[in-house]
Length: 165
Image (cartoon, rainbow, N blue to C red; front, top):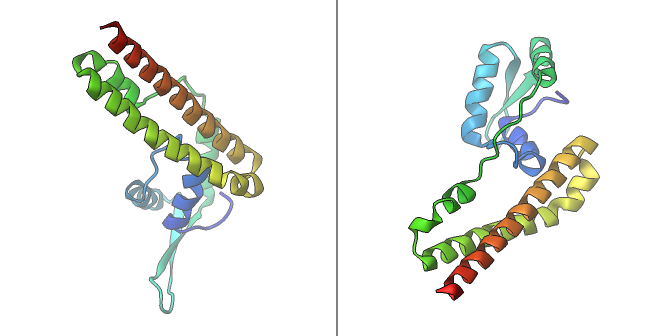
């Protein structure tokens, strides 16, 4: 909506503040861009570059703007929260106690690493994101913090179960 971009630039833009709410990847962006172009919601032009790969620049059309705003204004329903670890934890009773703890600790490591990355880019987000992008970013940080607390609670429960035996 703001400016013309390549698929790579779109992915980069979304990777910071939007990654918690969408599974946007290069594998999903390019087919989506192709469909948007076929439906005349964007147009593309090839930018020839010397010494670098050519770039396909995407620009939203007026029809695309109208469709985007229409979808933005559409009513929303409450969505189900999905998390693979929590879905698996529901069935932890079927795993050996050491497997449960190992799995929980591995996931905590991933969450801790994600939290560190978010802390590292927070100044950049604060300085360059618009207010609403920054709210999305901060929401993502809260989601990670809450997940860490949930998994830590699970670890403590798992340890308590082992002590009872």
